Length: 115
Length: 110
Image 1 (tube, rainbow over the protein chains, first blue to last red):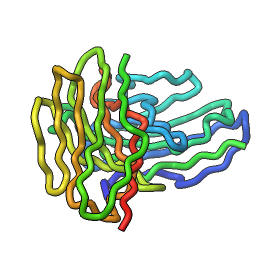
Image 2: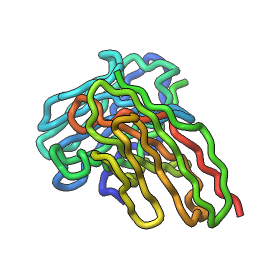
Image 3: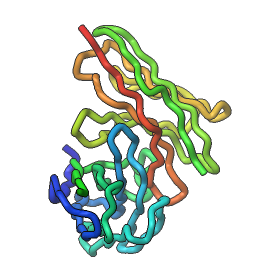
Image 4: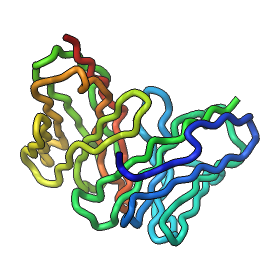
């Protein structure tokens, strides 16, 4: 296990609703990244936070937003949910400037189903 | 932008050796990583290559050729538990965030 935890593990929402997913990073890690993984696909980068600031974003609309807290935990918020948002949402922590090019340590994910 | 290509499926038998190839296109290169993901699980780090050559970690090795924009993951002495999806990934321009390939599903049979 990586020491990265995510909650909840599963979630069912309906179109148009809003959702907040949470992540606690591995001790000592100052960077959190969020990924969306659709069935049968690789994880897609949503955004990354370093020291409470967003410092990179993938090709996701503004209704995907996030926060990082002083203890380096993080939240992913998705507004106006769409059916295509159904996926596994993965949080990964890393140490900026760490060895191995900043190896990412993934949490178990939150599986979101939008009906 | 960045893109990665890897085979979608590979099958092998226990005890065999399998190689999973990955070619990439990036605007800047910050290393090639490999991750393993079992069904329903989280991706776990296997290896990282920043420089050309072979990196060995137990039964798994990873190779990189930057001039060819190519790498591979070599799995030896395959075991049933190696049945999983394997992803190659490059670092994006944003810090340590990764851009993943679509993954290769490895099925190991007895």
